[in-house]
Image (cartoon, rainbow, N blue to C red; front, side, top):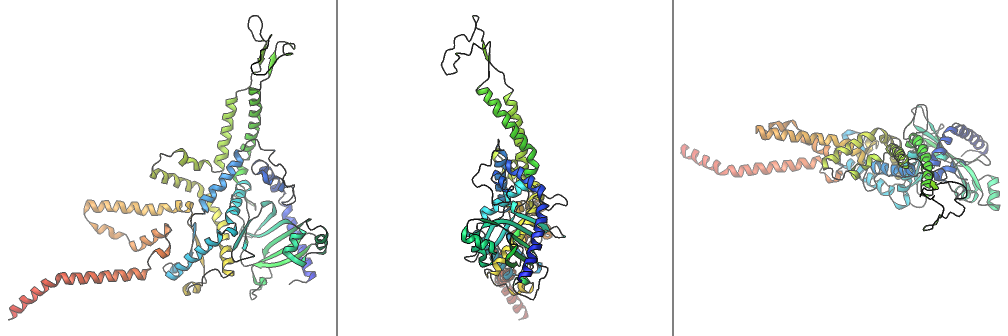
Length: 545
């Protein structure tokens, strides 16, 4: 542990780093606040107060006149969830990095079991993954960046997920553009801080704990690469990432620790050159969102005038006793020739305004990917082939953008999950071949989006086989099938289709079955040939005699 002087110096250094990151994010805070006001109003005041000390329960939707953008954001989150992490499917699998182990049955079974354990703990009720994952997707849609903190449960073995509000997070990249440092700036009451950090709190907080336990104080959680790492040590000093909880009051480190894997998954939707934070759909749609809000205000005024019109009178005496109640009779409203002395003021073309609003809504829904997923609803009469082709189109359109979430969000999250599960002893013992390969693995995504991208390979071999079978039928020459290596094709197709390894026989078993079948065929041929052999033997015996 650090002594008091070392702890104080390090706390000062980390807080100085945090202030630099905080100052460099002012433009982003202003931009995100503007988006929150019009797209995700619950966050509006959070950017003003750095995330935790804003007025609770206040009205935050005063800037919203049309709810298209807020609805589109909710649908965007649901779309990403259905494409990348559908909770009713096994949307990823684990495979050995060493391709020679792909045919090792114990290794394949180990990865299948590890994958099942990861899904079991990820979707356990106390893990809270589903709701937190949705918050991350919505943060991507609104602000272009998100943050998920993955750690172990305190009470029982398992995983715990926390979607951290972007207003609290400050990123820093390494030389390869990978986020390797995160500073989280958040508040806790003196009572909460004592529950977490105990007597390590500075004296000022201890005093408030006795007198005003519900007073809030600011803390910084810094996760950075450990520069003084000692790989020979087994405690946090030997871990690649250092963790420091710092009290801003008193500038003191109240907890020091470490992680074997980076605990924050920090996805970004799109990223401009030389920028650390991402840019999301709401930033692209912001002009249309502002325009739609102004159009909606104008339409409300026009509708009000149409329903409760402005009256034009011949002189100021006509309306003295004028009644607007239904069924009332107003004498003097027309002259002796029946011409109206009171008329309504003509308003603008209301329908044109509606058309203009629909055009802006179309733009917003396009940017948030909503329109891509209305195809099946709007065209229920499509054939199965048309549905497949439309799905492939979606996959091609979404792959460049959504595929980034696999590398920046899901990949780091899965690595962190496996690390935490291994640390808690929840994963099975590795087979010898995998131990020899140092347990290295790779992640293969099996989500609907990934399947749409891989479907072309399977459909390609099926189309080729259908064509070849037609050639066989025409020429009556089955030798053309010799070009296909079915021992390679069948395992590869099953792999693409996500068939579990335990459903398939090992190569050794297949060889034994084939050998047994060959022996049976040889025996059958011997039995069938026995009468002929006996006849030949008898004839030869007679000739010899």
